[in-house]
Image 1 (cartoon, rainbow, N blue to C red):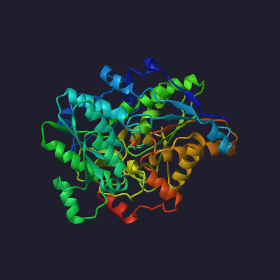
Image 2: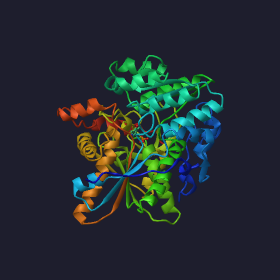
Image 3: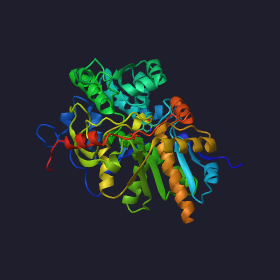
Image 4: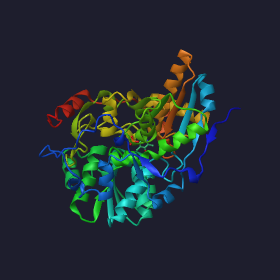
Length: 454
Ligand SMILES: *Cc1c(COP(=O)(O)O)cnc(C)c1O
């Protein structure tokens, strides 16, 4: 029997710095714009929402940013995370490819999200902040911030996308166990939520709406800041600990990836595993192929427009240049709630425009089929979001089989699916359907993009 081989670093080998890809970009990231003046914003413009340490990380072009020792102490609760070689999956597929996966489901929240929740809570607490507001889709981010907020004595208020709030009651129970307050979004707690409900009382919600609600409350109070679980530069940077560890572990395995695969909602777990390898390539090293996998029902990278847009539906955030389906677009209610976002991280979008990464989209039923095959081979039940990365990696392995190539594939298994078993039950019952998005609504949302002639 060929069990997975585990490559485990010891605590002393855990990275001491995060990697900032902005230091190595061949072309600088387009500026963030003020929605009124359309002029580039400065750090002070973001101060109502974020503590200055995080704002400075957001705009930094230093290659390495030190991970504070108290954050490393918390990371040690589950890091370094394991990297495995998927021998049984390789055999089941009959592929000559070598498949490796980095497993981020070992964190207390069960996903990669605490990698950024912990430093965000740390820097907020250090700045004297008392309360954090945030959004959550499937509940992974809300859970992670609730855990991290609790560590630093911060109150946490989570706006959970309505459809996930209803589909995944156990996630809310976990957030409440960590001491957070969780509301379904759109809610009656904010002016924006009330305006959405007035128009459509049964609105399923979206990440874009939940972000508007969280931002609205944070902007109102001095002691309250906002925390975002993906998309922003500093969030992606915190996740690079995943790729930095993977580099060490691939060396332990005497291997180097030819292809790296990650799923993309806002882009943070994908950036986490890929950016350190992309940076290595940009500095003259080997350049692996990099593949982003997104849901066919919310395909920002493959079907969206690259342009300036709001990060939220209520148009309260600054304008960022990204691949977007339009900030008013509401994706269908599929189960990978963490991937239901209208936009994409500006850094990931920029790399796509520069031709440094590829993107592809799969439907949720194909992704569940891949996740079930993975669980039966490797023993871990992936989160519905992670199933997209599994599907992408399996497709690469099957291509290698057709072409007779023994390439090395690495993917990020960004979380486990233990809170998503009702989605698996539906899949087994044949009740999981592939809803596609409304083409008319997409066209309308794209037509409503702000006009910026930069
Ligand atoms: C939140 C989440 C995602 C999507 O967010 P990214 O920023 O794209 O990583 C993907 N997988 C899991 C398990 C998540 O919790």
